[in-house]
Image (cartoon, rainbow, N blue to C red; front, side):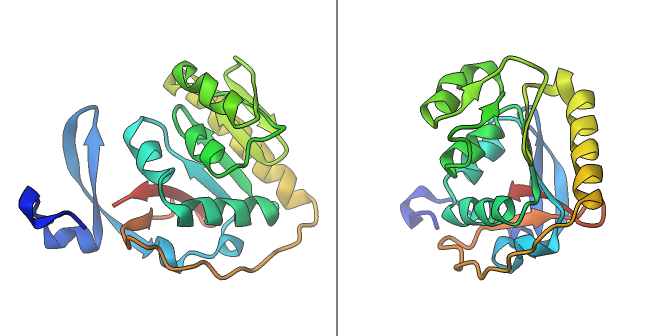
Length: 187
């Protein structure tokens, strides 16, 4: 993964855990259940892309993340992103013609991806939900819950796909916070 000349050493724990970060300090290791290679969009009701700049920056460079989210949207799943998370949606080409919001400095990135930027706490466009910042978290969580309730009341079609293996083999899905819900992070 890293050239030997850099001297980077990756702990063995990284094979089964993700190192969490709180602001700029490490905040401990969290075990994950699946690697991204093993995730099928049809098995989940929603995908939530975290905020902060580090996770979305890493996630948007992974082709398999884009494929997974495209499959989720095609299958009618709820795909939500907060703060810098909509970067991942823009790089996955999921925002063209959509209304969206995000952390203000990435407004231009969303517009360049074809989105109409709306400066509101939460923007819901179909099953894609975006939100600006941690201050908007309550409205974001409420919108995700409402959209999930709506999708459960209406019939859905499921599209099963086979995801190509992750070229770097370093993406993962963290523990499910609730049945049918996944949060994407880098490990």
